[in-house]
Image (cartoon, rainbow, N blue to C red; front, side):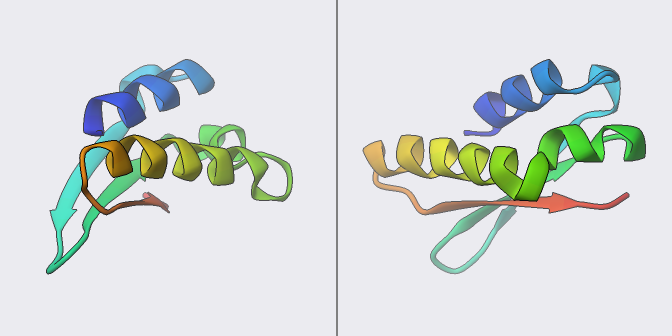
Length: 77
């Protein structure tokens, strides 16, 4: 899941070198924290959060195939 999120984010932003994904394991859910350059934050979130919502939907549906629970958090640096 981490590689998929990294791939998606790097192809959306202007500065792909600044994209990082951190895994945080919770009790019953894995949280992926996405960090991008401040100038690229709008490109990842999109208008009214549409792109962020679709990223979360893609990751969640891929995780369900393997029986995992995964959420995506977009974090300010």
